Length: 526
Ligand code: F6P
Image (cartoon, rainbow, N blue to C red):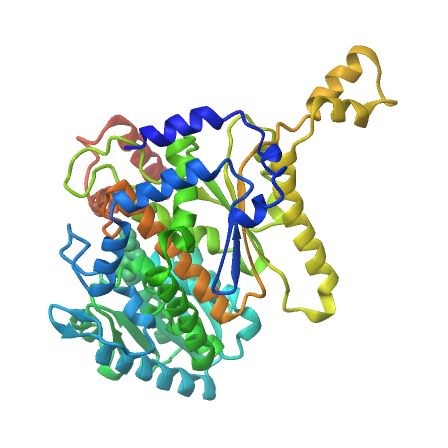
């Protein structure tokens, strides 16, 4: 299916991207504005022909029809027989959204109102610490948003416990006052072993400090029976339906910790941002549709040019967990080996997504991005303005660094330029040798998403933008972006290995390596 893209890529892979800028209109023509953001993809090999081919691919693969099906409540998560309607959680207009003929909005808005009431109560109480216990989508969304929106946080402090490693909960509880701490058990299934283990440890911690559990636990889950069984009263349980995927769930009850921290009003602004992006995605023609273009540029690099990874590089220290959040969003969604009908995928699935905030990454792994032998498409994100008005010079430096990186990737440094850099310090063969180490190949692709400021509304737009990008990529790849069977085998084997690690069962019959590792642990830890 991607033969045409590969052919186009073969034609242009050695073309100078810098030369493309001889056309003074290039930057504007290969950029897109929507929802107060500018997406600049001009520093790529895309040209009119390639863009037209990509847009044709999106049209031929039925992106628009599939998008409309998603928003209509059709069961596009076919392997689980579920609708995909996280967008309903941010549908503040309350416009009817039906699943199986039923409007889901009254329930969604009622839950939102209940969350707002509880958040307001907790913000006005003497609670100092809120501990969100959850993992995967029940952790990454809230922690990413909590850190991103720190300038808006004026409620109790939030902590996020996810890992089953006891070090995680131990270190977080050490920061909390047992008399003034509330726990949120965030788990769609209410069965995830890490979360339920940590929740029990939290309960034991309260008991060890002679604290009762009344009013101390809140549950966020689709499994209402499980939450009730755990002893959490109904008024402290916030449910959501199976049409909200874990990695898409920050907009609803799973976002409660964020709401408690920043307040219901700012949380609504976050939802509004997401809703604005939904409206754009639903109505803009493919060629002017930001999530579509973001997806197509990604597919071009992944499928056309054959680049296996992409770096997400936010020049915003508060977006430190965005790369991890996007890792789950993109890799759990589009890391599949079969197409929707179960046939082997005849091409690669989605790319490896990774990254770190700038400028830190510059002093760590950018060396490889600039001079390594593999090409890594980079996605930069940056706000024109920071929150610290008295530190505006920091922000100017931050922005300058961000822009410098994409320029350096584009421009590179030729051997002649490198020679000029070392001339005077070396001569002869040594000058040549030293110069070669200072050459930057350049001609490396990057995109930049730039926006005025990282407000709650802007964060909502950005997250919804990436969600829809993943959707479009998934549709074009022909896979189901909404299941995650690939996480199951490890979970099953971990359960089976538990008794081997404790010594209650023998490792006989395990492969030699696993048996050896179990033996090592048993010998040391007993
Ligand atoms: O194991 C993967 C996963 O199912 C994710 O998809 C999900 O976000 C995470 O585990 C946590 O699941 P739950 O919210 O049910 O505890």
